[in-house]
Amino acid sequence: MQTKTLTRMGLLLAVLIGLASAPPITVGFLGVPIVLQNMGVMLVAMLLPTRPATITIGMLLALAALGLPVLTGGRGGIAIFLGPTAGFMYGWLLTPIAYAAITHYLKPDFWLTKVLGMTFGGVLLTEFLGAAWLAATTSLGFVPALASVLIYIPGDLLKMALSVLVVQQLTAVIPALR
Image (cartoon, rainbow, N blue to C red; front, side, top):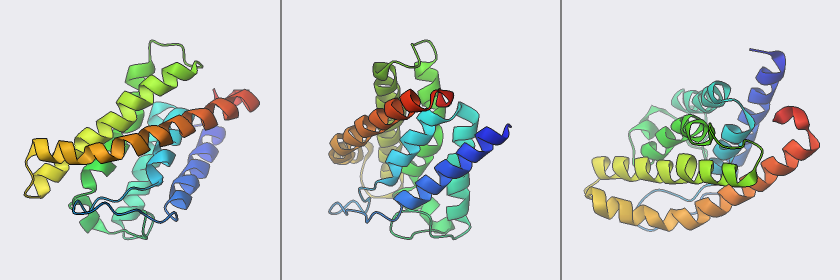
């Protein structure tokens, strides 16, 4: 990998860890908080090529697995990969791959391409995997789990729109990010 790509990966990993300092908002009985960190995942997926983006998110999850408090609320440790929030984190890992697959044949610099790619490859995929994992690890069935994660979609769509706006502005000012 080029030094430029490695530098961007390190910077975006720092952004992901920094976003973990935003306090989580707990949602009732689910045990799955609303976090700002998934906005960082969206930024990583849009600002890095697929492989480096996946590696960057994987590094965040590896640091968490090692017990470092790099997730929202100062969480870390292998146990979080078995709890109710794990499906969402697995969705984070797949976000760059899904985003790239959806946007591959579309105009890359167009904002609508980013919106479509991140809506389906980021928000909806992550919520679906989160619901599936929630159903598998709790007493909820799949349909109730899917219905219960619908509360997260408006906020995630807002974070996605903000991410697209940030990426559009960054790529306008720094053309090398394209």
